[in-house]
Image (cartoon, rainbow, N blue to C red; front, top):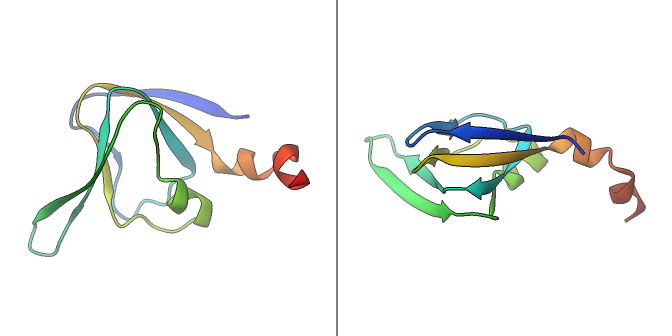
Length: 95
């Protein structure tokens, strides 16, 4: 399986609004938040994601643009699971 490990600094954007993620993110160290910004510029916190939790899975699996931002709120390490690799996995095809 194709797993990629990346490090992000505090306040770095991991996924931008309208990105179509190709991978599911798994927080290994640190934490991230999922937030949205309305047309007036108001920021709303939707979720806090900590170690061993996933994000962007619904967008990555459905190949749809994100309507949220994913941002590191502290230095963090994220493991990315490529969805194309996951879809080609023989284990999934058996199910």
